[in-house]
Amino acid sequence: MRVMVLGGDGYLGWPTAMHFAAGGHEVMVVDNYLRRTIARSTGSEPLFEAPNLEARADIFGTIRDTPIEVAIGDCSEMMFLDPLFARFLPDAVVHYAEQPSAPYSMRGFHEAQLTLRNNLGVTFNLIWAVLRHKPECHIVKLGTMGEYGTPNIDIEEGWIAVGHNGREDKFLFPRQAGSLYHTTKVLDTDLLWFYVRTHDLRVTDLMQGPVYGLSTWECEGNLRLLPNFHYDDIFGTVVNRFLVQAVAGVPLTVYGKGEQTRGYLNLKDTLQCVRLAAEKPASPGELRIFNQFTEQFTVNELAARVKRVSAALRLPVEIRSIPNPRKEKEEHYYNAKHSGLLELGLQPHFMTDDVLTQMIETIIPFKADIDSNKILPRVRWS
Image (cartoon, rainbow, N blue to C red; front, side, top):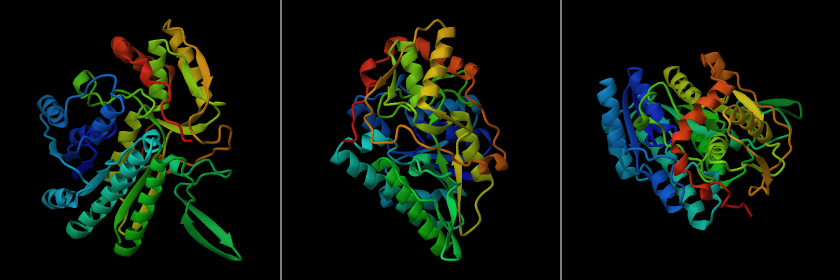
Protein backbone atom coordinates (compact mmCIF):
# COMPACT_ATOMS: atom_id res chain seq x y z
CA MET A 1 0.00 0.00 0.00
CA ARG A 2 0.86 3.67 -0.17
CA VAL A 3 0.65 4.81 3.46
CA MET A 4 0.73 8.44 4.62
CA VAL A 5 1.53 8.95 8.31
CA LEU A 6 0.39 12.35 9.59
CA GLY A 7 2.27 13.32 12.74
CA GLY A 8 5.15 11.09 11.66
CA ASP A 9 7.68 12.67 14.04
CA GLY A 10 5.83 11.66 17.20
CA TYR A 11 6.27 8.96 19.83
CA LEU A 12 3.91 6.75 17.83
CA GLY A 13 4.26 8.30 14.37
CA TRP A 14 7.92 7.56 13.69
CA PRO A 15 7.81 3.89 14.85
CA THR A 16 4.64 3.46 12.76
CA ALA A 17 6.38 4.81 9.66
CA MET A 18 9.33 2.45 10.12
CA HIS A 19 7.00 -0.50 10.75
CA PHE A 20 5.04 0.02 7.53
CA ALA A 21 8.20 0.65 5.49
CA ALA A 22 9.86 -2.49 6.87
CA GLY A 23 6.70 -4.39 5.92
CA GLY A 24 7.10 -3.46 2.27
CA HIS A 25 4.70 -0.52 2.04
CA GLU A 26 5.49 2.82 0.41
CA VAL A 27 5.53 5.40 3.19
CA MET A 28 5.35 9.19 3.45
CA VAL A 29 5.67 10.90 6.84
CA VAL A 30 4.28 14.39 7.39
CA ASP A 31 4.93 16.66 10.38
CA ASN A 32 5.42 20.30 11.34
CA TYR A 33 7.38 19.62 14.57
CA LEU A 34 4.55 21.03 16.71
CA ARG A 35 5.23 18.58 19.53
CA ARG A 36 8.94 19.48 19.57
CA THR A 37 8.04 23.17 19.66
CA ILE A 38 5.59 22.72 22.54
CA ALA A 39 8.09 20.56 24.43
CA ARG A 40 10.74 23.26 24.20
CA SER A 41 8.32 26.06 25.14
CA THR A 42 7.16 24.20 28.27
CA GLY A 43 10.54 22.79 29.35
CA SER A 44 9.38 19.25 28.53
CA GLU A 45 12.16 17.98 26.28
CA PRO A 46 12.52 14.18 25.93
CA LEU A 47 15.12 12.15 27.79
CA PHE A 48 17.37 12.01 24.73
CA GLU A 49 17.34 14.17 21.62
CA ALA A 50 15.98 12.50 18.48
CA PRO A 51 17.29 13.46 15.02
CA ASN A 52 14.89 15.41 12.82
CA LEU A 53 12.69 13.51 10.39
CA GLU A 54 14.98 13.88 7.38
CA ALA A 55 17.91 12.51 9.37
CA ARG A 56 15.83 9.67 10.80
CA ALA A 57 14.65 8.69 7.33
CA ASP A 58 18.24 8.77 6.03
CA ILE A 59 19.45 6.53 8.88
CA PHE A 60 16.59 4.07 8.39
CA GLY A 61 17.04 4.07 4.61
CA THR A 62 20.75 3.33 4.93
CA ILE A 63 20.23 0.46 7.36
CA ARG A 64 17.19 -1.10 5.69
CA ASP A 65 17.72 0.02 2.09
CA THR A 66 14.11 1.20 2.29
CA PRO A 67 13.15 4.83 1.63
CA ILE A 68 10.69 6.85 3.69
CA GLU A 69 9.55 10.08 2.05
CA VAL A 70 9.45 13.13 4.33
CA ALA A 71 7.24 16.23 4.01
CA ILE A 72 7.51 19.05 6.55
CA GLY A 73 4.47 21.27 6.86
CA ASP A 74 1.26 22.07 8.73
CA CYS A 75 -1.68 19.78 7.96
CA SER A 76 -4.10 22.30 9.45
CA GLU A 77 -3.26 24.44 6.39
CA MET A 78 -5.21 23.05 3.43
CA MET A 79 -2.88 24.78 0.94
CA PHE A 80 -0.14 22.47 2.24
CA LEU A 81 -2.07 19.22 2.74
CA ASP A 82 -4.26 19.21 -0.38
CA PRO A 83 -1.51 19.19 -3.08
CA LEU A 84 0.60 16.80 -0.99
CA PHE A 85 -2.29 14.34 -0.75
CA ALA A 86 -3.10 14.76 -4.46
CA ARG A 87 0.49 13.90 -5.40
CA PHE A 88 0.96 10.89 -3.10
CA LEU A 89 -2.62 9.51 -3.34
CA PRO A 90 -2.36 7.17 -0.35
CA ASP A 91 -4.33 3.97 0.05
CA ALA A 92 -4.35 4.54 3.81
CA VAL A 93 -3.70 7.55 6.04
CA VAL A 94 -2.68 7.05 9.67
CA HIS A 95 -3.79 10.21 11.47
CA TYR A 96 -1.62 11.12 14.49
CA ALA A 97 -1.29 14.82 13.62
CA GLU A 98 -2.82 16.24 16.78
CA GLN A 99 -1.62 18.02 19.90
CA PRO A 100 -1.57 14.89 22.10
CA SER A 101 -1.27 16.16 25.68
CA ALA A 102 -4.21 16.44 28.07
CA PRO A 103 -2.24 18.57 30.59
CA TYR A 104 -1.09 20.96 27.84
CA SER A 105 -4.68 21.44 26.67
CA MET A 106 -5.66 22.45 30.24
CA ARG A 107 -2.75 24.83 30.78
CA GLY A 108 -4.49 28.04 29.69
CA PHE A 109 -6.42 29.81 26.94
CA HIS A 110 -3.62 29.82 24.33
CA GLU A 111 -2.88 26.13 24.80
CA ALA A 112 -6.58 25.24 24.72
CA GLN A 113 -7.15 27.28 21.58
CA LEU A 114 -4.14 25.74 19.83
CA THR A 115 -5.34 22.24 20.73
CA LEU A 116 -8.88 22.88 19.47
CA ARG A 117 -7.87 24.58 16.21
CA ASN A 118 -5.07 22.17 15.34
CA ASN A 119 -6.80 18.91 16.16
CA LEU A 120 -10.13 19.61 14.52
CA GLY A 121 -8.54 21.55 11.66
CA VAL A 122 -6.28 18.67 10.64
CA THR A 123 -9.11 16.13 10.82
CA PHE A 124 -11.39 18.36 8.74
CA ASN A 125 -8.69 19.00 6.11
CA LEU A 126 -7.86 15.31 5.87
CA ILE A 127 -11.51 14.42 5.30
CA TRP A 128 -11.75 16.92 2.44
CA ALA A 129 -8.45 15.84 0.90
CA VAL A 130 -9.82 12.28 0.79
CA LEU A 131 -13.15 13.44 -0.65
CA ARG A 132 -11.47 15.49 -3.36
CA HIS A 133 -8.75 13.12 -4.48
CA LYS A 134 -9.28 9.52 -3.33
CA PRO A 135 -12.62 8.71 -1.66
CA GLU A 136 -11.68 5.04 -1.30
CA CYS A 137 -8.66 5.92 0.90
CA HIS A 138 -8.92 4.32 4.34
CA ILE A 139 -8.52 6.74 7.27
CA VAL A 140 -7.01 5.15 10.38
CA LYS A 141 -7.49 7.71 13.16
CA LEU A 142 -5.94 7.41 16.59
CA GLY A 143 -8.60 7.97 19.20
CA THR A 144 -8.23 7.46 22.93
CA MET A 145 -9.93 5.46 25.64
CA GLY A 146 -10.03 8.74 27.56
CA GLU A 147 -12.94 9.78 25.36
CA TYR A 148 -15.20 7.39 27.25
CA GLY A 149 -14.41 8.67 30.73
CA THR A 150 -15.28 6.28 33.55
CA PRO A 151 -18.98 5.35 33.18
CA ASN A 152 -20.62 3.07 35.71
CA ILE A 153 -21.41 0.52 32.98
CA ASP A 154 -19.27 -1.68 30.74
CA ILE A 155 -17.56 0.23 27.91
CA GLU A 156 -18.44 -1.36 24.59
CA GLU A 157 -16.23 -1.10 21.48
CA GLY A 158 -17.41 2.24 20.19
CA TRP A 159 -21.10 1.46 19.80
CA ILE A 160 -23.99 0.66 22.12
CA ALA A 161 -27.46 -0.77 21.45
CA VAL A 162 -30.21 1.25 23.14
CA GLY A 163 -33.75 0.12 23.82
CA HIS A 164 -36.28 2.89 24.48
CA ASN A 165 -40.07 2.76 24.63
CA GLY A 166 -40.15 -0.60 22.90
CA ARG A 167 -37.80 0.36 20.05
CA GLU A 168 -34.07 -0.27 19.54
CA ASP A 169 -31.23 1.49 17.73
CA LYS A 170 -27.43 1.60 17.76
CA PHE A 171 -25.49 4.72 18.72
CA LEU A 172 -21.92 5.80 19.37
CA PHE A 173 -21.11 4.93 22.97
CA PRO A 174 -21.59 8.08 25.13
CA ARG A 175 -18.36 10.02 25.61
CA GLN A 176 -17.45 11.87 28.83
CA ALA A 177 -13.95 13.22 28.19
CA GLY A 178 -11.87 14.47 31.12
CA SER A 179 -9.79 17.12 29.33
CA LEU A 180 -10.05 19.45 26.36
CA TYR A 181 -7.59 17.26 24.42
CA HIS A 182 -9.82 14.22 24.94
CA THR A 183 -12.85 16.32 23.99
CA THR A 184 -11.25 17.19 20.63
CA LYS A 185 -10.90 13.46 20.01
CA VAL A 186 -14.63 13.03 20.67
CA LEU A 187 -15.35 15.79 18.16
CA ASP A 188 -13.02 14.06 15.66
CA THR A 189 -15.19 10.97 15.90
CA ASP A 190 -18.38 12.97 15.37
CA LEU A 191 -16.88 14.70 12.31
CA LEU A 192 -15.74 11.44 10.79
CA TRP A 193 -19.07 9.72 11.50
CA PHE A 194 -20.93 12.53 9.73
CA TYR A 195 -18.79 12.23 6.58
CA VAL A 196 -18.90 8.42 6.69
CA ARG A 197 -22.70 8.59 6.67
CA THR A 198 -22.81 11.31 4.03
CA HIS A 199 -20.07 10.24 1.62
CA ASP A 200 -19.42 6.54 2.39
CA LEU A 201 -15.87 7.12 3.59
CA ARG A 202 -14.08 4.20 5.20
CA VAL A 203 -12.69 4.94 8.68
CA THR A 204 -11.18 2.97 11.54
CA ASP A 205 -11.06 4.75 14.91
CA LEU A 206 -8.56 3.20 17.33
CA MET A 207 -9.50 4.07 20.91
CA GLN A 208 -6.07 3.67 22.45
CA GLY A 209 -5.10 3.43 26.10
CA PRO A 210 -1.84 4.84 27.53
CA VAL A 211 1.21 3.44 25.72
CA TYR A 212 4.54 2.44 27.26
CA GLY A 213 7.78 1.27 25.71
CA LEU A 214 11.04 2.39 24.17
CA SER A 215 12.10 -0.04 21.49
CA THR A 216 10.40 -1.59 18.49
CA TRP A 217 11.49 -4.28 16.05
CA GLU A 218 12.80 -1.67 13.60
CA CYS A 219 14.90 0.42 15.99
CA GLU A 220 16.53 -2.23 18.19
CA GLY A 221 20.29 -1.78 18.18
CA ASN A 222 20.21 1.85 16.98
CA LEU A 223 19.58 4.58 19.56
CA ARG A 224 19.14 7.21 16.84
CA LEU A 225 15.98 5.45 15.63
CA LEU A 226 14.33 5.30 19.07
CA PRO A 227 11.03 7.17 19.48
CA ASN A 228 10.76 10.48 21.34
CA PHE A 229 10.74 9.37 24.99
CA HIS A 230 9.09 11.85 27.34
CA TYR A 231 8.99 11.41 31.11
CA ASP A 232 7.60 14.80 32.11
CA ASP A 233 4.16 15.70 33.46
CA ILE A 234 2.92 17.08 30.12
CA PHE A 235 3.92 14.48 27.52
CA GLY A 236 5.09 11.50 29.58
CA THR A 237 2.65 8.60 29.95
CA VAL A 238 2.40 7.22 33.47
CA VAL A 239 4.40 4.00 32.96
CA ASN A 240 7.27 5.74 31.16
CA ARG A 241 7.26 8.45 33.83
CA PHE A 242 7.37 5.95 36.71
CA LEU A 243 10.31 4.08 35.16
CA VAL A 244 12.36 7.26 34.80
CA GLN A 245 11.47 8.27 38.37
CA ALA A 246 12.71 4.89 39.57
CA VAL A 247 16.06 5.36 37.84
CA ALA A 248 16.39 8.95 39.11
CA GLY A 249 15.53 8.03 42.69
CA VAL A 250 12.44 10.26 42.66
CA PRO A 251 9.40 8.87 44.53
CA LEU A 252 6.72 7.53 42.20
CA THR A 253 4.03 10.21 42.12
CA VAL A 254 0.60 8.62 42.48
CA TYR A 255 -2.18 11.15 41.91
CA GLY A 256 -4.71 11.09 44.75
CA LYS A 257 -5.96 7.67 45.86
CA GLY A 258 -4.34 5.91 42.89
CA GLU A 259 -7.31 3.71 42.07
CA GLN A 260 -7.77 5.27 38.62
CA THR A 261 -8.04 2.30 36.24
CA ARG A 262 -7.06 2.41 32.59
CA GLY A 263 -6.21 -0.01 29.76
CA TYR A 264 -2.52 -0.06 28.75
CA LEU A 265 -0.53 -1.44 25.84
CA ASN A 266 3.05 -1.88 24.69
CA LEU A 267 4.36 0.37 21.91
CA LYS A 268 4.94 -2.75 19.80
CA ASP A 269 1.24 -3.54 20.07
CA THR A 270 0.30 -0.06 18.88
CA LEU A 271 2.25 -0.83 15.70
CA GLN A 272 0.52 -4.18 15.32
CA CYS A 273 -2.93 -2.64 15.81
CA VAL A 274 -2.40 0.15 13.29
CA ARG A 275 -0.94 -2.23 10.70
CA LEU A 276 -3.75 -4.76 11.14
CA ALA A 277 -6.35 -2.01 10.82
CA ALA A 278 -4.73 -0.68 7.63
CA GLU A 279 -4.16 -4.04 6.00
CA LYS A 280 -7.72 -5.19 6.80
CA PRO A 281 -9.62 -1.94 6.13
CA ALA A 282 -13.11 -0.84 7.03
CA SER A 283 -15.76 -1.11 4.32
CA PRO A 284 -17.05 1.95 2.44
CA GLY A 285 -19.63 3.70 4.62
CA GLU A 286 -18.29 2.08 7.81
CA LEU A 287 -16.92 3.77 10.93
CA ARG A 288 -15.19 0.84 12.60
CA ILE A 289 -14.12 1.34 16.22
CA PHE A 290 -11.70 -0.78 18.24
CA ASN A 291 -10.73 -0.36 21.89
CA GLN A 292 -6.94 -0.58 21.66
CA PHE A 293 -5.34 -1.93 24.84
CA THR A 294 -4.21 -5.30 26.15
CA GLU A 295 -4.22 -5.06 29.97
CA GLN A 296 -6.01 -3.09 32.66
CA PHE A 297 -4.36 -1.71 35.83
CA THR A 298 -4.86 0.86 38.56
CA VAL A 299 -2.14 3.46 39.08
CA ASN A 300 -1.36 1.83 42.43
CA GLU A 301 -0.86 -1.53 40.72
CA LEU A 302 1.50 0.06 38.18
CA ALA A 303 3.52 1.74 40.92
CA ALA A 304 3.80 -1.54 42.84
CA ARG A 305 5.07 -3.34 39.73
CA VAL A 306 7.70 -0.71 39.04
CA LYS A 307 8.82 -0.79 42.68
CA ARG A 308 9.15 -4.60 42.65
CA VAL A 309 11.17 -4.67 39.42
CA SER A 310 13.35 -1.78 40.57
CA ALA A 311 14.13 -3.55 43.84
CA ALA A 312 15.43 -6.54 41.86
CA LEU A 313 17.79 -4.11 40.09
CA ARG A 314 18.86 -2.62 43.45
CA LEU A 315 17.11 0.65 42.79
CA PRO A 316 15.43 1.87 46.01
CA VAL A 317 11.98 3.18 45.10
CA GLU A 318 9.42 4.96 47.24
CA ILE A 319 5.75 5.40 46.30
CA ARG A 320 4.21 8.73 47.31
CA SER A 321 0.62 9.92 46.96
CA ILE A 322 0.29 13.58 45.99
CA PRO A 323 -2.77 15.83 45.51
CA ASN A 324 -4.42 15.04 42.18
CA PRO A 325 -3.93 17.92 39.70
CA ARG A 326 -6.70 16.54 37.49
CA LYS A 327 -10.46 16.53 37.91
CA GLU A 328 -11.26 12.81 37.74
CA LYS A 329 -12.77 9.98 39.73
CA GLU A 330 -10.07 8.31 41.82
CA GLU A 331 -12.19 5.23 42.59
CA HIS A 332 -14.58 3.93 39.94
CA TYR A 333 -15.96 0.96 38.03
CA TYR A 334 -14.06 0.19 34.82
CA ASN A 335 -14.65 -2.68 32.43
CA ALA A 336 -13.86 -2.00 28.78
CA LYS A 337 -14.39 -4.55 26.02
CA HIS A 338 -11.46 -5.07 23.64
CA SER A 339 -11.92 -8.15 21.47
CA GLY A 340 -11.94 -6.64 17.96
CA LEU A 341 -8.20 -6.28 17.42
CA LEU A 342 -7.53 -9.71 18.91
CA GLU A 343 -9.94 -11.11 16.32
CA LEU A 344 -7.98 -9.28 13.58
CA GLY A 345 -4.81 -11.07 14.72
CA LEU A 346 -3.20 -8.95 17.45
CA GLN A 347 -0.57 -10.91 19.40
CA PRO A 348 -0.16 -8.96 22.67
CA HIS A 349 3.09 -8.13 24.44
CA PHE A 350 2.19 -8.02 28.12
CA MET A 351 3.75 -5.91 30.86
CA THR A 352 6.00 -8.57 32.35
CA ASP A 353 8.84 -7.95 34.80
CA ASP A 354 11.27 -8.66 31.95
CA VAL A 355 9.70 -5.93 29.79
CA LEU A 356 9.94 -3.36 32.60
CA THR A 357 13.49 -4.48 33.40
CA GLN A 358 14.60 -3.99 29.79
CA MET A 359 13.11 -0.50 29.75
CA ILE A 360 14.85 0.47 32.99
CA GLU A 361 18.17 -0.87 31.68
CA THR A 362 17.74 1.27 28.54
CA ILE A 363 17.03 4.36 30.68
CA ILE A 364 19.91 3.92 33.16
CA PRO A 365 22.68 5.19 30.77
CA PHE A 366 20.75 8.48 30.53
CA LYS A 367 20.36 8.92 34.30
CA ALA A 368 22.54 12.05 34.37
CA ASP A 369 20.24 13.69 31.82
CA ILE A 370 17.05 13.28 33.87
CA ASP A 371 15.63 16.62 35.05
CA SER A 372 13.52 15.95 38.15
CA ASN A 373 11.90 19.39 37.81
CA LYS A 374 9.91 18.04 34.86
CA ILE A 375 8.26 15.24 36.84
CA LEU A 376 5.96 16.85 39.40
CA PRO A 377 2.68 18.19 37.96
CA ARG A 378 2.91 21.77 36.68
CA VAL A 379 -0.66 21.96 35.33
CA ARG A 380 -3.85 21.79 37.36
CA TRP A 381 -7.36 21.35 35.97
CA SER A 382 -8.77 23.94 38.39
